[in-house]
Image (cartoon, rainbow, N blue to C red; front, top):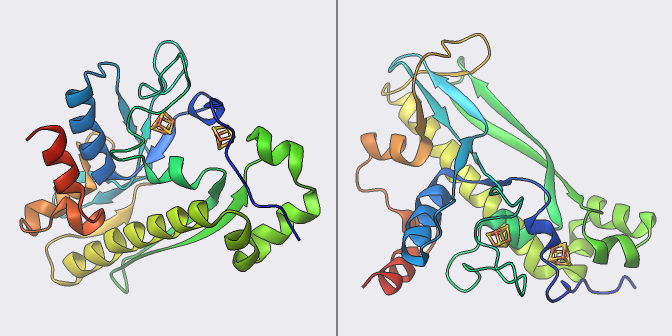
Length: 229
Ligand code: SF4
Ligand code: SF4
């Protein structure tokens, strides 16, 4: 029986090792929370970008939340290593760590007018709890069998599944807009890199104005209202 995973209190190591991959709607949520919490050094860089050749824009499907000048996530409390957004909205990558996508492969198919993706997961040995408590065989068992992973780290796998649902919502909505003739997508290679980059959530809202943050993250509007009534 593999022992259940438990994050170490006052560790925060995973908040210092690299930029955090976030979804486009999370950029909007985290930017609003940073304003409310007076976090001033929050910056994002576009991650995976596709091209809309019909409207002359590039569309960012992910972003990288940058570490600040001290080499830590801007939401990390330096003293006790707690997360300032823990009880408000923690990015899905943070909630699923150390159970993370190892490879995400997007399919942008002009013939079928289809946006789709596949994901392979890994259990990160950058986490000291993982490194010190699990054998290679146990890690492989978790990677190869999601039911074992669920037993060991149920909350982390649930967050990873929530991330898949969000990714699917982007893919399905873009597919629907493409098939309805509003957009014409290509993978970014070889396309015009002078075109502006637009956040995929804001881009979708140009065509479907009634789509809300709550559709990507249930009840987030309530959370944001509480921080700024
Ligand atoms: S590195 Fe591991 S133990 Fe440390 S905070 Fe991150 S998940 Fe928890
Ligand atoms: S948002 Fe919170 S959990 Fe995620 S990296 Fe920043 S401080 Fe860590």
